[in-house]
Amino acid sequence: MAAARWLLARGCTLTSILQFLRRQQVLQLYRRILRALRDVPAEADRRHLQEWAREEFRRNKDATEEVSSGSWHTSFRKSRKPPKLQQQCFAREMEDK
Image (cartoon, rainbow, N blue to C red):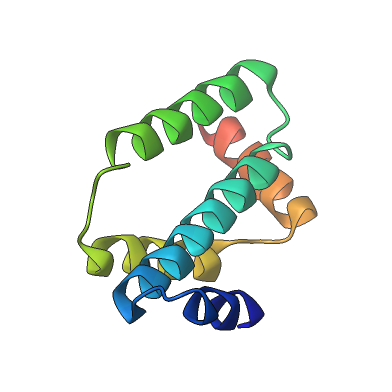
């Protein structure tokens, strides 16, 4: 919130402040996704998922519709499992294949 006050003090409009805050949220989401991918045990799978995430963010970098990015952010946060549980689920999925 301090950043928003700083921007307001410098004459920025409310729209530009909201865009700034949304950008910060998107960057935070990107970092969280890449950190979560560190827990993927298989190197090839990890690299594939990292490249997929990078490409999705590049492809949507000019997107202005906040509903889709906000819902993706919410669904990612809800589905995020602790790393050990993720590895257990991933191992079970690999055994099923």
